[in-house]
Length: 449
Image (cartoon, rainbow, N blue to C red; front, side, top):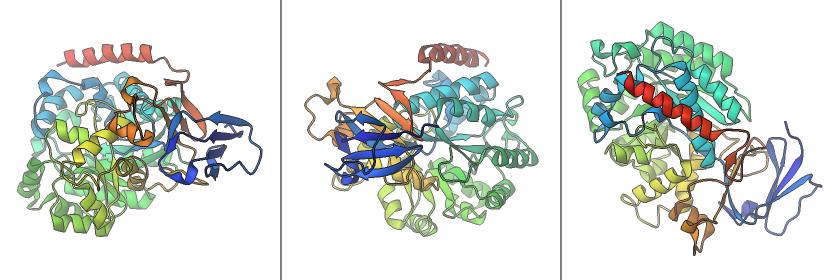
């Protein structure tokens, strides 16, 4: 671990003025935050001159499906809403293998890292025979790339034979799910400040697991002090399914099984009525807004500001790379900015607001107080962007330009005090070789049907 004192000096622009003079890092923590014109209190070992960089807290992706990088723009899934889209892809995903998980995870994390993301949550819920160690594989790839991860042990227990959507080959029995969930928590979950790996429990959705598994997952999460995550209120089809299956709307069902709490964050959260928004806010339940996915699948528009006003943390996620079809966090910020202006006023949806969802908001969804902002004792996670591309020519406000002009890639990224991206490239990592492996495996997967 690098213990040198590093001064990232006088950035071109910042998310707020508190660190406009830069920050001093020691180890993996911020030890000084400087206003304009201030000097470090103690000598530093290194200075990085950030005068050409917009400096942000590391972006935090609070919902994703890494494996889906193998099925981007999949022909049979094009131009479909969520349920038929899933039905077309489940048989493909049922044929995932260990090498595919390894490579797809590398692809997703690399794309995220290059876009300024320092912490990523993944929702993996597919464990066909031979893929029982999928999350162990993901943990190893995150370690190699030096990224923070919140990996959720997803699950599906209701196959087509039981009235669910997934094929029987993709579901597991509930004892197996719970035993593996406990194994992963005990092996990988770090509860301490500065944790690089955390585990959450994440039954896929109300239409793919039983009520018993929802309750048991909540009990297990409480026992070990980990968080809960699932998809909820993404489409009208889901609402209709829940009413037919359980006689309840999705949020009523969530409350029935003991999930309405501040230890839970939900992906999408589109189709809530005003009373449901009030109840979510009172419980402190987080919502991860996934704008690109919601647009691609024509699912609807998350009521972000209503949820925040009620008391719910709102974060940002790219969602899966088969419903995005990318893993770029700074682009997702722009998508959120544009999409939310269709619902709310220009005065309310600002570039600062959407950047806050991708940083502090996502951190709150994940239950983290040590990341998502730049302050003394916070983790040294930063994304630094240059404005030297044609798209930024003539831009006035550098911070606004990141969002309005469509930043695509970070120039430098630091995670836990270590530079992971320098001059727009991941250190000690062969991207071209990874691309070739991914293409080969994507073709193999597509041809397996």
